[in-house]
Image (cartoon, rainbow, N blue to C red; front, side, top):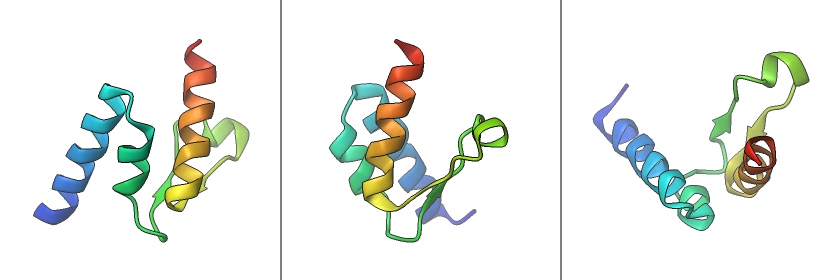
Length: 64
């Protein structure tokens, strides 16, 4: 993984931990893909900044 990619992942972790959904989504490019652990069970994959917001909402619902 390139240093640039590592920095993007750190930005995403930081935004997630701060509860900053917009910062989380802003770190993603249109071709970025989020494949959560539950994807194997639910066949759910999220792609791009808009889908990051859907991932966020689904993750928050799962933890509530």
